[in-house]
Length: 254
Image (cartoon, rainbow, N blue to C red):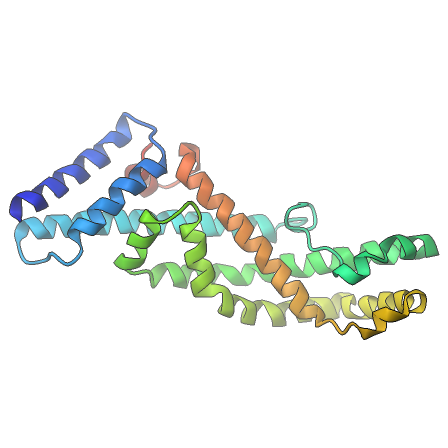
């Protein structure tokens, strides 16, 4: 058992040492980190085991650092002006049943109102997304060694999935009132009702739709947030330049 633990410690030393000579991808380290975490968890009775536990702590700390960097960048990107509105992949569109009437509304002279409504939904999301930062910090701080092991040994989106599982409900609870306030102050709700009235006058079936608009914008905003988070996770896994802290460079290779 001592020989096995010592081997694990030596493996970690080699792993950290390669940071000065290699730009190996995070994927390689994740595979090795998963093995170390499997070997070291639950063995805490000897001095060699203590060294192994230090290895585990180092790996977990590196992962937490990576997640803090990634979540911060995702939030800051979306919170900037046009963070949502200026990016096709996260831009919040008109609700689908209004989208089908866009050309009709534009043709009827309401193009400016349609664009203003769409912009205002995205501005509300850009305002609300800052609520995610402290929630992500708490989720990282609460992460256990077992959580770290699962992320190391999981798929390419394992960290993003972890955040979705552990933060989605709280994020939605925090986003919705912020979005409601932003929409009320910018006239989004009134603009939406005006567009619906216009659309219903042309397509009577639309009167059957009863959309919870704040809920729609909130869910669209969260979808965009997790998409950006997945992109940040991919960067840290594959791009050395994305590793911006000393610990990231030490653990994930400089």
